[in-house]
Length: 261
Image 1: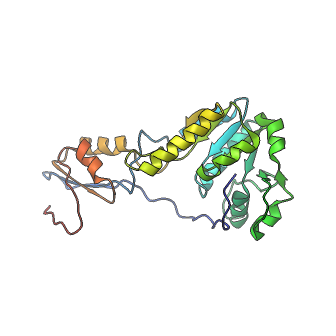
Image 2 (image 1 turned 60 degrees about the horizontal axis):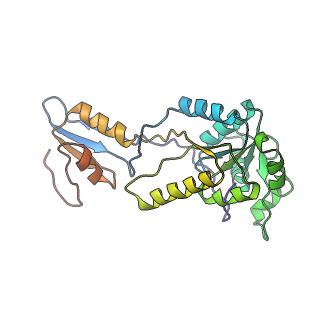
């Protein structure tokens, strides 16, 4: 599933850089420069193997299954596709995802082919964009998913959650393979509540399985504690105040402020 809008761009081939780069000042020094990334995630991340194992187990259950990922995360799409196949279910993708798969065809291995390896969700609209036209005849209607909900794994993102009313997946599981809400960001918290409302409405189990590439708050603060620095300088993060609450000696960073190391 996926919201309306312009055609999605092709996925970038480059891998995400490590979000945490800790540099100890060396023996006898007490300063620590800590790159906390733009966001600090809650809890501990799963490994990619744990994500796959959790998805495999969840998607093998009877009943409806919804799988959420970031729109351009093709690695997670591959995981959903492979786990759905192992469970004997068909992966249902949005027209945007189908368009993206066509754009990277032959460049990324292990991905399904729209209309063959994966069904394309055929939501009826009053008007279709030009790039949607090739997928209209391949589309699987909501009625078909409603008749046999246990035979499909429907992909989704936050903006397409409203489409769940089309096929009403009562019971079953929603695999959320995206970052958890971050307490310092009101919009993130609100999005988390909206998601939970949908999960509760359809009486689904909410399963969190995500390997983001970013270290979580717990992991970052564990590194800081282990290194035992007297002063901690949080950089590359919008939430340096979180360091002040959890790390002894955390310095308040501000533009133009000078520190001697």
